[in-house]
Image (cartoon, rainbow, N blue to C red; front, side, top):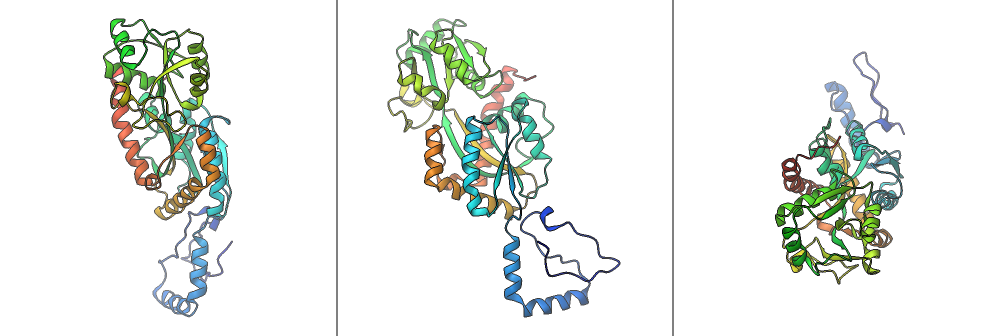
Length: 359
């Protein structure tokens, strides 16, 4: 909608972008001739209530917002995005449209969002791979930390340390002892070379002074299939993928890599309880916008996300995926940036020490 407050045309007057092409909220221009500025202020003082209403209206988005998902439809990231985006509409007054942009382990999508206008109309849902691991394993044309503005932390899921049911060790301590006594003999399935599962395996080797072989797969489902069949010895997977097999007795779960037990599987001990204290690994999701997006826009988007994450229906659907929503005080841009920095400091040295480079 065009504003009803217009300046008289002058030879020095420059054309301005249309309202829908500008970030929200908009602010009045201050580059006016002194006499014209005085007259504008005088007129504005007489119509202050009406002007305030127009300014507040301009703070809202005026067209649909796009949330880019770096992976195909149907996966955990896509499902989380669709549930959150659907509820954000109530707070924003505009639909949030999901756009799946796949390829290069999420790098095509993230690179596209980096180049998008910093106006609040393009977001990306990212996670531990796209905004941490890929920054060390790929040669990127952007910086995963500094070329985005964080909007909000969404949810996380802690990984399980799993072995096939025929593995001789009864618990985590016996498992580590077996690996040390048999260097290079165990095989670990990983969902893709250079991905987050690969990093956890490298972390396990480093923390336990053990060695085992990595077998890359195209995803978590085929890894679990071969673990059940006894074709590989161990893996680390998210609860959504692996808990049905654990409950059916098809594989053994030694521990959850978190400080607290899973609400969905309280019988599985934490790594602290099982004998490997501090061995934490969680796969988390967050929302970002391009660098230089105005803080007022980020604040409004964050409020819409917080509203969505408080919705009982959204919480129930994410819980069904094995996702744990971050507490309200951590659903902030600052918390997301702090977590991302901490994860980079944790994982990048492990990646670089192992010489992992994705092609």
